[in-house]
Image 1 (cartoon, helix red, strand yellow):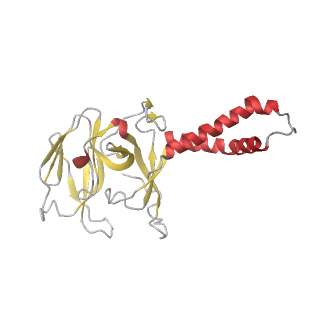
Image 2 (cartoon, one colour):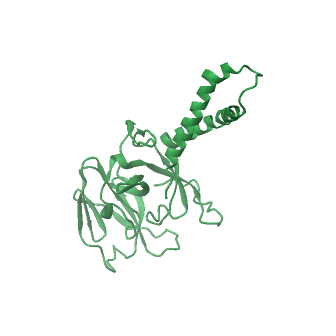
Image 3 (cartoon, one colour):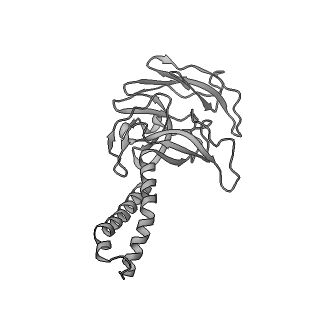
Amino acid sequence: MSINLALVLTILTAVTGVVVLFNRLYYMKKVPPGGAGNVVIDTVIEYSRSFFPVLLFVLVVRSFVFEPFRIPSGSMMPTLVNGDYIFVKKYSYGLRWPVIEKKFLETGDPERGDVVVFRLPSDPSVNYIKRVVGLPGDVIVYDGARLTINGELMPLSGYPDIETDVKGFFYEERLDEREHAIRHSVDILGKTGSNPRLQIFEVPDGNYFMMGDNRDNSQDSRYIGTIPETHLVGEAVRIWMHMEGLEWPDWGRIGTKIQ
C-alpha cells in the first residue's frame, strides 16, 4: 500500500497550524503568563509551535519548488540508473495545489527533450519518469527503432564513451536542438538483430508522448498511451545522490545535471 506523503504532510501542517492559531487567538489569553493551564493542551501547543514552521516549510518547498524522487529501474538508462536520487523542479509546468493537483498558476510548458516525472494515468498514485518526445499535435513514427517526428527523422550517431555494466548499443540522439544518450539492445545503425515493427502515434491536444532512453526496456507511451498535461509532476533537473542498498554512494554521479 502506497502512502500519500503530500496528503499526510498537508494534514499535519493544517493540524499544527490550527493548534498554533487556537493558542494565539484564545488559549494564551485565557491562561495568563505563569498561570497553570491544562497539561495535555500545553504539551500539544508546545509541540505544534515547534513543528508547524518546519512542516510548513517542507510542504511549500515540496509542493511548489523541488521534490526528491528515487529512480527505481533502468528504463532511463544511461541518463538515469537504478539508485539515482533526483530533484524534480515542480514549478516548471505550472504551480499546483498539493493533494488535489489543481493548477492555479501557469509557468511554462514541456519542451521536446525534457525529462519529466508524471503520474501514471491508470494509477495516479504511481510516478513514472520518461523523456518528452512528442508535443500536442505531433505525429510520431517509430520504425526500425528510429524515431521520426512530423516527417523528420531524428539524427542519431554512435556514442562509444558510455561506461556501464549493462551491455548494449549506445547512441546520441538529437531532439530539436537537444542531445542525449539512448540505449538499444541491438545495433540499430548497423542493422544487426531484430528491430521493432512500424508504430505510428498521433499526440492529442493537451497530451505528451513520453519515451524512456532505454528504448528496448521502457514501459512508456508506446504501451501506456500519451500523458495528459494534468498528470505532469515536474521536470527532473539534477542527481543529488546515487546509492544502491548498503553500498557506498557513487560520488561521481552526485550533482550531475540531467540532460
